[in-house]
Image (cartoon, rainbow, N blue to C red; front, top):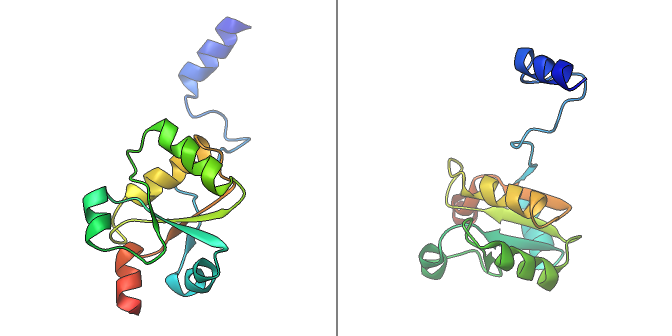
Amino acid sequence: ALCLGLATKAVFPEGFGLAAEPEAEEVPRVTWEATAPRAQAGDWILVDARDAEQFDAQHIPGAVSLPDNAYPELLEFFAEEHGRSKTIVVYCGTEDCDLSTELALRLRDEAGFEDIRILDGGFLAWQRSQ
């Protein structure tokens, strides 16, 4: 059975496609217009994935700085502080920035957050709305 399993994996490295695993990119996106009222009401937590220097220079009011390269202990502290059932909206600088996706995946997969979203357009979307 082990040999058959290894042979099958060698021939079909992606599997048979019967039970598709969710893609890493399948973190839902949300607009600033949908996010703003919920964040202002305290229902959603805004998380800035950019480095501390960029956060200190300017950030969305009420956002929490949690750089995408944060240590696992910091992710755990953040989870304990805010609760894993809270909706988290992660953003970085622009639409093309991957930091928000990387951090969103870490918050979901490593820290166990249940409702993670990415701010479509990132910080730039907020700036344009001001």
